[in-house]
Each structure stands twice: as structure tokens, then as C-alpha cells.
Length: 353
Image (cartoon, rainbow, N blue to C red; front, side):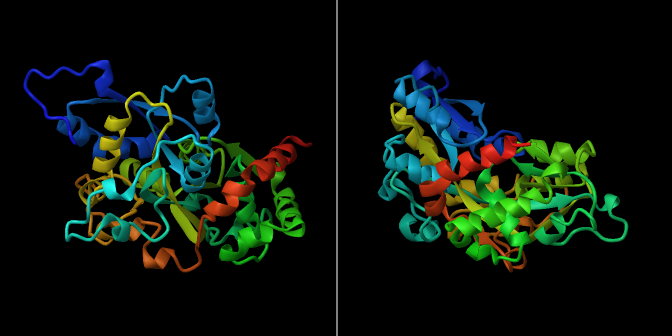
């Protein structure tokens, strides 16, 4: 139940939640698209925090019984794994409101996107982008081009994490995007991915936080970079950057809201998640960043960019038909089961001369 607001209402410590997300343009879109409205509606306060993903910080808080984050935005594989490890509070689909036409939430959210401990909010995508000014004769059009340092010389940016970088390496080596985790599940396939990465290792600038790739492009530290699609869109729409997104071989994923086990504000956190994942709020957030809503009732609603620019946001979503012709959904079960082992090997490869 939402907290009623009175003229004399005062936000106390128990009326405050810490919401942790990825920072940059995405956190700003969440703030403008949902957080402000929820704070007005509830009378409560949100303290924003940022992190770079993963479960390490969450696990540490739970294990030492010092939980300072209430709600966290996590990737789907972390939602599944964290739920299995008891790091998150349970969330039942029955608590989520239906679509405006009465369709139950269980049917309105995209298939297989709900978990026992989390609610999906957006569909985001790993893509790469480049500045056409660096390629007067035509820029890269595929991951094979991204890995072609002779035809497209210059530094390129990649996230310093196995997922989905190893998948990009396999795509560049001719593997169908939908088959990349199947190939990575074999010793030969995993070695094949590392062999492909070896070909560009000396030409890579590694990044950790989602806000870094647009800055790398803007500062001409790279000529192309792996990035989250929404971050590149925001730079183009808000800052006037003339950058191109390459959708071919995109790997898309759901972002989920979770409540950290041991939060002292569980009911308020649940209220926030219920509110921010309604159809109305998903549509509103889509006005600020090009991540696709996770509800069917919101995903097809025409949305115009929040500024005075006439931009049809649906065309820039990962889920737009023209952007999905050679795409793969993140195999959250594979990465939930194998991320530790593969990441350890990736880190060892990364620091090796």
C-alpha cells in the first residue's frame, strides 16, 4: 500500500530507501521516469547509489549482516543466482498490478522474465558504436569488423568482463549469436573465444562502468566501443553526438529490481518496485532512455523523447524488429551456473602479458 502524503508529512529514516543502479544516463532516466513520481506519491525518499554490477557487494552486505542497499538493479543472471543463494527477498507475481486492460502481470511481462525474487524493468542491449568521422570510407558493420584491426585500425573499447565479450569474439569468428553460449560450454569453444580475443588484445581499452564507453568515444581514446545501447542513444540525443550503433550481433538482457535480504525497509522497497514496474511508469521511463519496457502493454506504446526533439523512441529500442534480425538474448541460466569459473579464466587472461 502506498504511503499517503500530508502537508505536514516528514520523511524519517524508516521512510527512506537506498536504490542502487548503474549510474550515468540510466540512473538519471530512472530518477526522472519513476523515482520522482514515487517519492511524490509515497512521501518517502530515495537515496541513490551506483555500482558496476555483480553480486560481490550485495553478498558481502548480507554475510556480515550490514545491509545498506535496499533495492538494486541487477542483470537477470544475477537475479537468478542471487535468489538461489538466498541474497534477495522473495517477490511474488501476485503483488504486481495488472496491465491497464486487466491482463494479469504474469501474462503481461515477457515470457520467462519473472523470477521468484525479482521483477524485470527494462530490456537493455550490449552493442558497439563508432564515430563515422573516423571512417570516411565507411565504418564497421559487424563484430567481424570490430575485430578487424587492419581494415579498421585504432583502439576499441570492451568491458573487462567475460560476459558478453567472449560471445562477441565468437560472433566475430563466425558463430551464430544464438549459439554462442552453447559453444562456450565446450573447452574447445571457450579456447576459440580466447584465441579470437588474442588478435585484438593489444588494441583494446578496457572499461568497467557503463558511463565510460561514451566518454572514451568523446575523448577519441577509441574509434569504436562495446557499450550499452541506452548510453549511446543518450549521448546522441542529449549531447548531439553523431555516433552510429551497430545492432548486428547485439546481446540483449533484462534488468531486474531486487530487494536485498536483510533490508530494514522491505515493505517500502516492495512498494517502490510495484510502482516503478507498472505499465504507466515503464512507458514514462522509456521517454528518457532507449531501453525497452519489460511489459508487453508498455513495449508497443509509441513514446516520444522527453525533450523538444521529435524522436520516436521505439525505433531505438533493442526490441525494435529491425534491430533484432541477428540478435541473441542473454542466456541467464548458463551465466548463472558458469560465470565464476569463466570470469576467473578471463581475469587471468586479461592480466597475462
